Length: 81
Ligand SMILES: [Zn+2]
Image 1 (cartoon, rainbow, N blue to C red):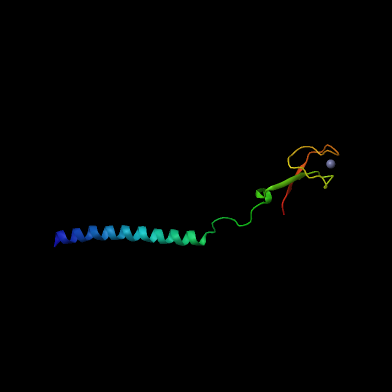
Image 2: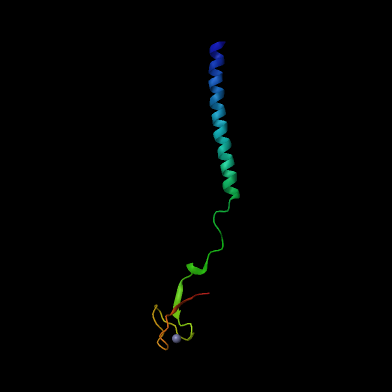
């Protein structure tokens, strides 16, 4: 009777540990499900640069960064909408 009690006590301990792990896994899964994976709104910086333009001369469209051929200002990246 004594041996049965100790073995059932050990079994009960294992069941408690398994139950705790399963419970923790469920709580973690629910927490993960409720947490949004990543912010949907991303800044424009990820948009590809179509061309480079002059802030003073919007008609200028150059494929690479540099200076405006008309006024010599540094070109700014012109992004696709
Ligand atoms: Zn210019």
